[in-house]
Image (cartoon, rainbow, N blue to C red; front, side):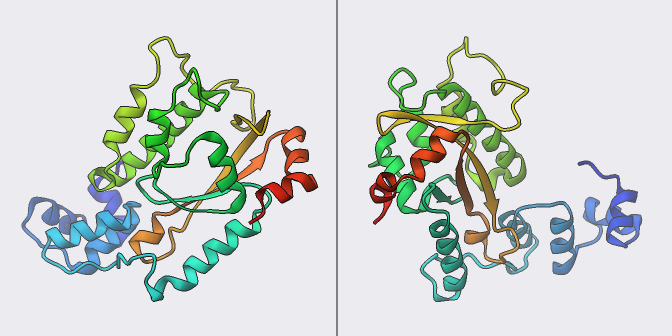
Length: 247
């Protein structure tokens, strides 16, 4: 969304003149003002830190290793979330779409898909052959991922480092690929996999931990996969499957 100086000044409760002075360099914004503007505009925490650094201020958000003891309560909560999602697959990815954590069901599914040996979901799709892929609706799946990628790029800017992944994945679509994401009358978009000697269909609910103040964890995407038909639901709730996906 675009804001005029007047709109921004009203929203931030400062004068339009002060906004103008900051834009033209006649006034230097305070550390607190940069954070306020960044948060109001919905900028990622990484971008706010970059703006602070450019203005000569120290960053306000931490960027810790996921092994850091200070993040242990959050990491434990994420692990509890994906474990509680069993028997259905759940995946945790970082901003660059590297797979960080999975539950046992997702681990089994990804092995069936041929993901083993890969770290990044986009890299896997780029190297996956549409003709031989175990993703039945490969073009639809890739277009759905591209929509998500482009949205993340628009919000993260250069800090995301996703432009190359988007370009490479987009080049995998054939020129005669149908535009759009399938049947417009569908209430959700299913992704269909040919795995375990059958076709299983899923839709995903994706959560992001935006209220966490650490950059690394706030950029995590928690993807919970749910059955989109009764066949898939019955498969995952059978005793045989529970044994298959259990540790």
